[in-house]
Length: 189
Image: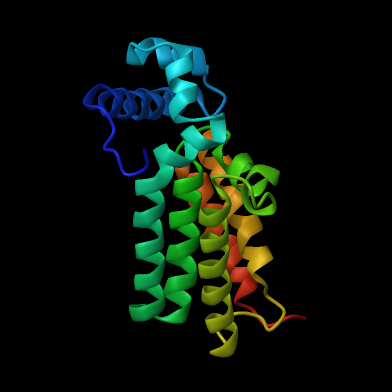
């Protein structure tokens, strides 16, 4: 019966699961108990799995709006910002995004993200990588970074800064970004 609208209670359950998953991931990290999320949402674990077959599917649904906002920001930087500003602001934005939940940077960087084409997070990780590549390529083309700077370099900085935001402080993460980008913007010795 393709094309049928979901029942109202199914839609409510879906929305409650997303709401409680957001809270649980923010408070407990990406490893938060799925049973606890279901319990907080007032549904059985089978209902959670009926909507989200695995943790990545739930995480992907929770992150969907955040991803859309992040990608729109990246597209805006590519369209309107100078190359150096885009490099800095994109790095900061991705580090903040990846630090939203403890463990998220690992999920994004790991096999559950870009490398696993069956992952619910694959398309978002690929889009993130594409924007990062475009930001670095433009900065290289305009001489704003070392000619040997790569998107992988920037991705490593983003991951390290995201980790620092969760483990130390946002200020320390921003300092790491500033110092590292300063090095990427200098000519090689």
